[in-house]
Image 1: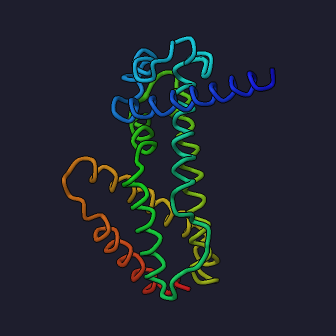
Image 2: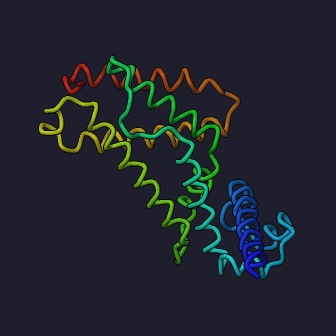
Length: 211
């Protein structure tokens, strides 16, 4: 009996994963409205009853898909937690920006789905849209905390909002980078991000806030 129960749990986990993967692929291409249970059913070969059993509704399915994609991206993306850093201030920024841009350009599904949800306003806000706002804030906080470790000790005393502005600038850069990659044939991401990072680093050094 224990083996049968274990097998059912394993099959249930596999079905749930297959549903999430299929939904992410469909939603990243078609957006919220274009993603239907029928399309997920067709992609997975699972009955609609199984999809509803795992997630309850399309709205909850999209929310779970977005969170799954985000957690997977964060698990594989370079962390913003301070670690071994280059000695030069500008090099630190370039390293972090380059790593973040690379991870986004190779695993962009949650960003694509989130941006589509952000641009689609409804009377009743989808759970996935609210969740995307939450994970963006979580990412912003992680970036903000990293900046606090590399700026000069007195920089935040003089300008308490500096790390917040820098984190939001980075998020804006990633949004623009994502759209550029998806809408053109220009793929020289490393060079573009390097120039932005160097310019920002040199600007901060000129302000006297570099550590």
